[in-house]
Amino acid sequence: MRRLAVVGVDSSVGSAAMVHFDGSAEVSGVRLDQQSVVGELCENCTDIVVCGDASLSSWDDGFGDLARDCELVPEYCQRAERAGARLVYISSDAIFRGPWVFHDDDSSKFCDSCIAQRLHSIEQTVLKSRRNLVIRTNAISDVSGSWLDQLRQSFRSQIPQRLVANQYATPLAASRLALLLDHVLQTPAAGVVHLAGAERLSPWNFATHVARAESISIQCALPSIEQEAREQSLRCTRARNELHLRMPTLSQTVTELTTGAVTRSRQAA
Image (cartoon, rainbow, N blue to C red):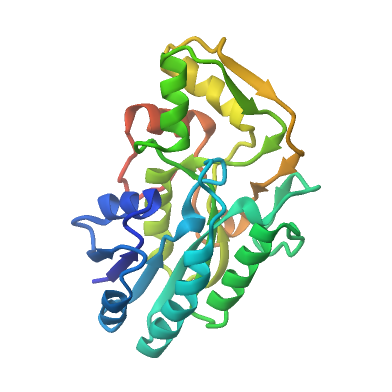
């Protein structure tokens, strides 16, 4: 039986992973900064899944502070290496900016922003071990205070909200990411794997779909192109071809985020 440790249960992705794996694997969960406990877990686990601050959706206003990841991930990599465990780091699509519309798993055309440079540095630290895995994604959660939660509150209160309309990504629900992660962990996959939604859209596009699904007026959703254009969409070639996984459609993602329904089937779709 797999023995998993989820480091970062205080994150939305880590929380979703704990909910998904409950009862399906021997799993332990700790906060990202519980260093002493992580050391003990490495000795008894086959996989260490690190859901740090990079696992927050890049659409979230709180995304960007990677200081904890920069400090803690190298230490956790060393401990996992000594214990012979695979470390799986949840990274972000913010490592890309364009001009390509979609970015492959092996793409090296990274953004030159400070955030992207930090992400790249952390990923390289993780990948020093050939057994380790980096998963790039953009996982949307509806937990209190999240981007989606704040969006819903503004919609329900009919407070005009300006939403970016010229920055594109391929988001999926955090619960769906946990399901896909389950399948990936059942393989010896290493290196970089993209897990994302199947459709490219902007925060404004996404917001209009959520509003329609919840029968909320979208008149207060105002498209904005004041920010620089970005292309962060992920092409999930390895996930599809090597791991035989299907990425969720926009309709599936919206349904999962508006009803909380995500299948726990062994067939990831």
